[in-house]
Length: 207
Image 1: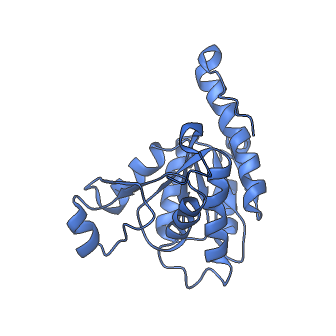
Image 2: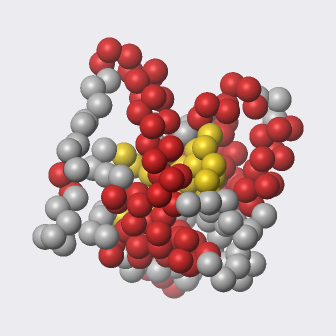
């Protein structure tokens, strides 16, 4: 624990970062953007949830830990040994890794449903899979815009989904990590209030 940050008792949100495990197609700023997303999640009183993988989510985990935050991973593997030796996935920058034993598709379902919201960065098929699960569950979504094409692909999917109108209030876009988190936490608060009504009491935290 970083004593200067004192973030552990201030956690309000569980925010998943979804993105490519292989980031060669993502452009030169992808790692920097990933780290900044991780930092901003912590600054916005969130715990970072990842797929305990490489690439974009890994760099988000690095940023979150450098900011003094908590990072929880959901692995596709059944054991730590399989996580490292069979799936060749890292354990760095995570406080806790849960070994789902559900391979990638099952892990993605557990991962997104364990989160209050999902942020989508640069990615391909696995990232789109996590997006569609969250979209189908009507979960708050933050789409990080960048040099990659993922945000444009997602916009196209939403437009063709025939559910765009009912979902638009739950989806926010921005190319700036801080601005994206500013928007997303408001959507999370609104969503929780709608779900829990009078039982939802926002945890107001003074900066």
